[in-house]
Image (cartoon, rainbow, N blue to C red):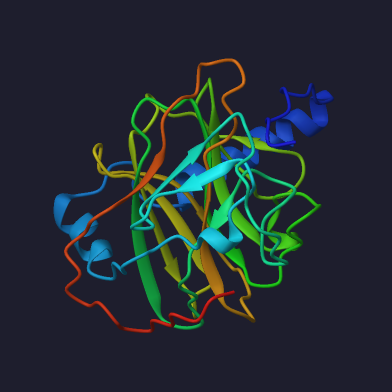
Length: 237
């Protein structure tokens, strides 16, 4: 299920360890507020992301230009495709990246639930979790703000407000995946020390809208593509 699980109570020793780990992350993962120049530098590695409708879950509709994805209650008549994501209401981009740095931006607006980041080419598209060991490096949000998957169990991230625009930055050789609140110019979370051995694809999951509180699409936002084409591979997954 794409619905995040509720918070779990930890024994005092585990709770202290988790608290210490979160404190360490907050101290190590960089400044909470970026300068405008630093965010602009990250965005210099922007790439032109287009979503691949052949990978979209049957209850997702991808716009004709490949820049928007929307959840629908009724399953569209999509033809069978082994590349299609079946276990999660998600979609991958057409573009895969196997070296260098890249950045892409998303507009969430007032959506309450979403899960975004990158996934490796060989992910299980029918089953499994959303953990790095399974090939996913993502953050998600549902009602009470974004949370990041690092290791089991889920790790809560405390933010002052829910981001409406999120930037995703990857440094392949450095093994880093970072997330930013674009409007606040603030750092959300980073996965570091990762070992990538295959192509990474932008991954979007708008979550369902069964209860009517999570309407609207996820939208790929345009960025000034000054370095477009660098370390870029348009091969489909």
